[in-house]
Length: 286
Length: 177
Figure 1 (tube, rainbow over the protein chains, first blue to last red):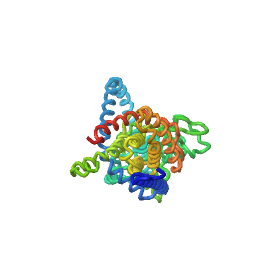
Figure 2: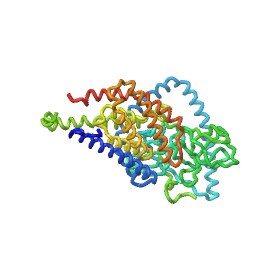
Figure 3: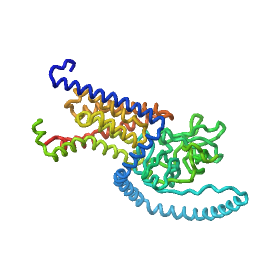
């Protein structure tokens, strides 16, 4: 290789050098892109949105078989326990009817008291249902792509929930798709309140299924089993959305088990409270 | 050889070209497959690095059809789609290609078990690099390495399946009749 004799080996050397040049320039380009991406530029976001929008219809079709199989397995499992479940549900139903009566009474009372005090009502949420078509990143990033986008009124910063509780927030909204950053992602920071005392803290994801509480007050006494709800601080989310439960609480850390499991995300709801959110420059509330 | 190439009809040329993008096409397909949710508890957290398997496989068997340029393109596409920091996946795939291209003598006509074993080392390096890069680029710090190790093991486990599918495609479609 070092001493090219014929035309062929000279050509080989040229090819080798060209390849080497291509390799080095591409490596340089990846580093440049890392820096551009870190600066959070609009171009990168647009590129992500465009690619997601283009690929979502394909992913939608690809997700179909897995969804069907999962549905089938769930049906079989439920069929086995149908009698027991029925009895349980009847019992729960009776109990819930009693609660409903109580809730209605309290709601009335609450409305009257609010009217007396002249408090401003919280904004009503408008919601959009969407399907999860891609669960991306494996252990490196915790986000999902959903089948609703700008055309359905989905915008950056909106809260995404399931029946169980908060799943995440919209970080990028395309025309027909949107990316939801899950609360377990390493970049996720959510203002929350802990337990009955309602101590303020920030729920910080770390790419593991169990996020942690940070900036928790020194005096706060939290215990395993405490419920975590969104605080609504900084206008990021509407207050009171269920988030998770404390599973470990010692001096070093407070670990949370979210109510929403990443694996079971199939359909989600995007809530639009008309809040500007922490993503916008001018935070809405407070 | 050139004589035969000159006598090709446009259709044959088109067909040859279509066959030649097969490695790239299949890599994109396994990437999308990796993105598809399985709804199986615990699986999303340990999704295998399918593109790494694909890039490694084609770097050994068809380096002519999937070079640095396409490796870079796949990496960028994956970064954009998965929401990972832009450039990190591309860097990992490029370096994987570089390692394999520089060890072509070692990989030449080696039994499957040897390439699988070697993949164990290459993939470990790749996962470590990706972990390091993401940790450095992301302001929020490093992902717990334990979770990544599980994903690494799963990637090793799916290697034979993906490699088998690809080798079927290679012998069935890529080798000129």
